[in-house]
Amino acid sequence: MSVVPISRSRKVESVGGQVLEYIRDAILSGRLAAGTRIDQHAIADELGVSIIPVRESLRQLEAEGLIEKRPYRGAFVSTLSLTELMDIYVTREALEELAARIAVQRMTPEALANLDSLLAEMENATALGDRSALFDLNGAFHFTLYTASQNTILCQLIESLWERSTVYRRRFTFMPERAAQALAEHREILDACHRGDADAAGRAVRVNVAQTTKAISGSSAGSDETGLYRMDDQKR
Image (cartoon, rainbow, N blue to C red; front, side):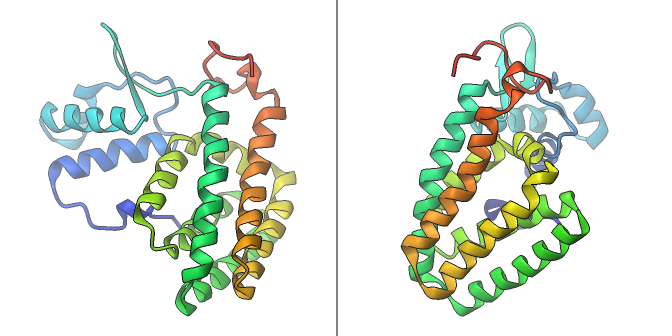
């Protein structure tokens, strides 16, 4: 199962849109690693397009924070500092708690049934130790919940933060000791949704997101052991 984020659930038909999705997916999947220089001509040749839609795509991805331009060197896949990553997660805690609270108040039976189904799949993936499936199911669960808020702006803000931290989220999803705890946290979120308790759902979501915040803060990632973090900021 793969998750199609909210804003990309529609079919992309234009050449420019297809190029944009191709490069974005390469970054979010890790095929283009953090710090990698983007070879615009190679991408254009691979996709059989001119350089123009590739350049336009890189401008859009730069605006999204996934690409950074370096003078006289070209475009590179963005690499977050530890402080930037922590800031993303602290902001996610607040926004996702808010989205969950609103969602419970506007929850439809269909959305609740979808959450039930996703949790069942998460239980199965946890039992099998399928970390890749859990990564996708986690995203599907959260965005099914947040979409129920019917607040498009809030969902788009959350999605942009998820995208900027995708590679980093994947690392912590694949920590074996995290799976059982995460499953329990999602059960608590869903139980609160069934009770119609918006405050409890919001708190449970915040706790769930905060676990990764704590893992990032307390891990040895600050030493750049994975090569994912910039070394210009290790003071946090």
